[in-house]
Image 1 (tube, rainbow, N blue to C red):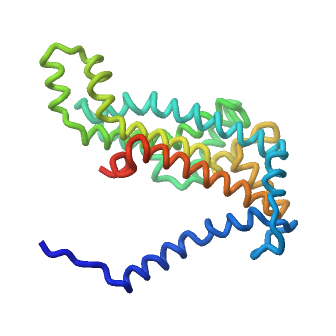
Image 2 (cartoon, one colour):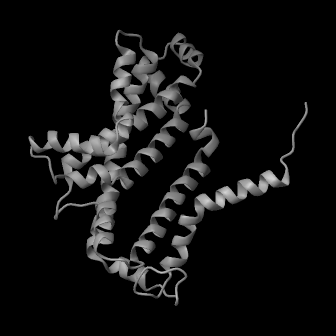
Image 3 (cartoon, rainbow, N blue to C red):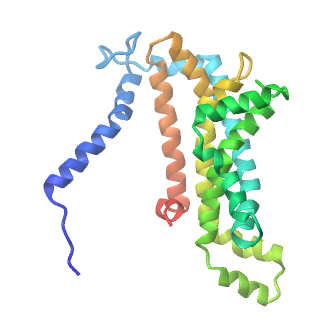
Length: 264
């Protein structure tokens, strides 16, 4: 079997492309330690003042905790609904199965701003604007298709003969699902959990249509902050969000492995 080695020129090109793609993210780190009062690169002085200012900003910290528990609730609901739905879509045979799966995953095909406007129109008639239940339902509309698709792919990749053997040996359907199916689809569950949490936590477009002065999330609060100010506090917040995302990715890597979790 002939193995083609990558040429130095190609390696250099890939390195330059990666550097180009990551440059905006990399530049956020030095800017967050700026001692200047406005966004400027390179900074004329260095300080951690903006991290302290971020932690002391009651509006941003309140929005952070709102986003955190909102993403947690939405992620749990996505799994509670997505796991049995994915099992039904992949294990059962019934009329309209493909159409039902397409309906569940349809929000993935719609532009976010169109989806947000549609949710706004519907929720206005039910009094769900600027409410916690409204935010949960709206985020669930976005996260559930991701979770369902990942879980369905995970189930399709499992060995169904193991379940059949368990049933042959006398195990009840619920026991087979709990002790055989769930462990086999665990990489998919981990991937769906991470994806649903990040999508909900970072959602800004749809949330803009639904939040109000008394209820807002971190992305919306940062969006409003940038609209009236141009200081490195936003860079400090961005660094912490990047680190949070990396922490979630590292947890997935340590528990299941990225290749096993996200790549089939």
